[in-house]
Image (cartoon, rainbow, N blue to C red; front, side):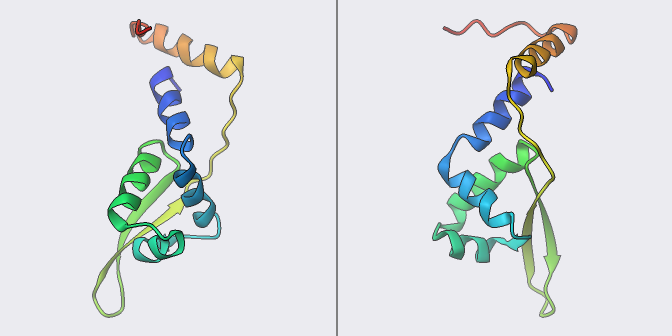
Length: 107
């Protein structure tokens, strides 16, 4: 994992609403409308959070057809373990250096 991937992961879990999404999906896969109802969140806002979680590799979404032919988008958690320590940060920076990535020089 490089520093960009590490930051995406930390950013994905660094929001209270996304933690609530993870908590709901811990009980099993759900389709978006059901998840939105449980979280009392609009579907557009939920999709924004799900997109962030999916890009970080924490959830996966799949379209499925219901028995009546409606397309339903289901999301479920991917197995993950979040471990952050100095070694994790150094390994991410080492991977950047090995790939020739320039360090970010923002203040």
